[in-house]
Image 1 (tube, one colour):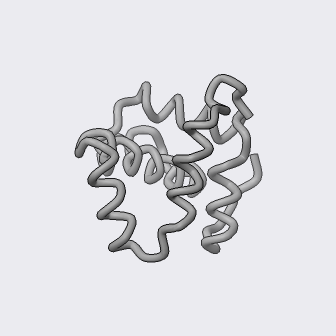
Image 2 (cartoon, rainbow, N blue to C red):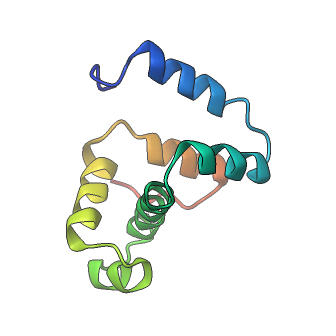
Amino acid sequence: MNKKIKTEAVDHLFEAILTLNTPEECYAFFEDVCTVNELLSLSQRYEVAKMLREKKTYLDIAERTGASTATISRVNRSLNYGNDGYDMVFKRLGYQNEEK
């Protein structure tokens, strides 16, 4: 875990997120908390991560998501050298998890 983000304020945000129960509640909360561009960027990164785990090419990912190759590369680095957060969520959602 990155010690730079481990703050009381971030703890409070995560506690708030953990109270959300439905996609509608998530939309309401995140639309208030995030700008449209921030929310679209987060969702784009998540889609990129899913496609990387499906072994899609950078070109295919860029065409389908609109993500830059720099963004795809950053997400790929997180998948390979991060805290396994994406993989934890993918496993819980039942997505195929390719070996690293």
